[in-house]
Length: 238
Image (cartoon, rainbow, N blue to C red):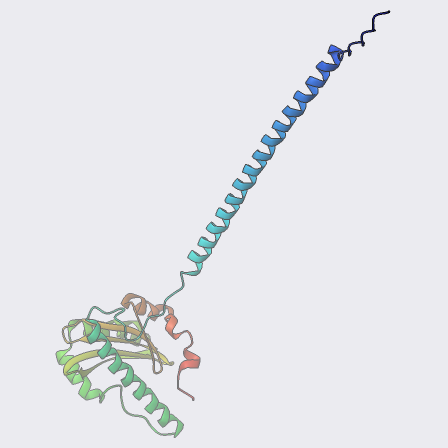
């Protein structure tokens, strides 16, 4: 009996083909690694870019806030701004003179409407006031009077006068300066020469501020921000 034939053994793939397959597999793996790294870098880059953009926007917002927050703050008539006296005393004296100026201007306006002469001076009769203040006024008040006489009266564009009035039982002194127009200046002093306020006026309106700034307006003719709407705020003509 003939012996059974052996099945031919499977031929293994040629070494060259195996080598190519191995190279392809390795190449694909390397490509995937590179792609992964590239994507990771892109992701990091996007994240960094996003953070940078957010940081830039935040910085821009801060800059805008900082820019818009520097608004000028209007002075308050009864605050202690521009005064070296106590807050309570300053408020009381300023309130007194603000009311006095309002009454004075409104009476003058009524006389003007009725075609009448208006002879009353600010606060008191001029002769009585001058005799009282010139004898007892502190140096600070008389020096203020001389300043406005030089800055306004000597130029023939207005007049400066010194007045006195008792507020809460204590003497106070006011240098009230007017021009040929409707504007003026008002400085208030306590009996010891303490400055209680320096202001720019427009008819009955009063805006207090820093003494040097207020006096500098005798040269420029400017007004504090509180009087920027003076034309519509005044009661004259209404």
